[in-house]
Image (cartoon, rainbow, N blue to C red; front, side, top):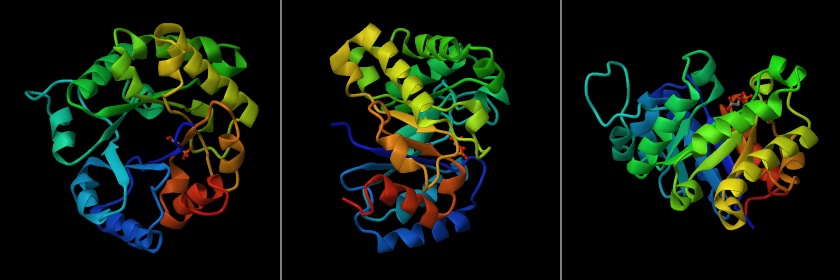
Length: 256
Ligand code: PGA
């Protein structure tokens, strides 16, 4: 059985003060992060604070992006080693907002995945189609292409410490979540692409998450699907009570 994963993508939200307020609510839930995995992706500016705020809770954190180079003349960018220094175990890569707004290509994302592994960061790689691509019957083709680029040249060990999030772009922040059937089909496709290259034993270990308008009311149904191991949550992760409620509902009403 793969562990359930609950990842909070705060995007460009939360100051350090707001991050402190968020974690204050967690002290009431000592079971959070036990028997399942909780990962928080705050903005870079709040990462240093998070380390102190999680206290003894088994919560992981990571950057929402990074550049692939170690250091140098790349104004405005953040290097993998800088994330490591702040205790990040994870880094979110290839989120659709990075791909669509900041024009990151499949090749850029692949380079960052390699850099993450080089520095001992576990990449969580996002893939997913636009509404036009879904309407045009190209959703699978798009995800197959993104997966091929993401997996290109990785070793078995690297793939085993990578996770993926299928996030249909039309479902992100819109309230229009994918049907459980469609989400399962696409998460199964993600796993199938891993299996085709690395075999079933590796593919069976890799967490595949769904993301796109996940809420406390719909999480349980997603997690009943065979290939959905968790969720990457944006809007509904900004309030601690809503994020905690998602985890609770997913686990059948209580923390493990
Ligand atoms: P959402 O965002 O939960 O607000 O739809 C998900 C994401 O962008 O990762």
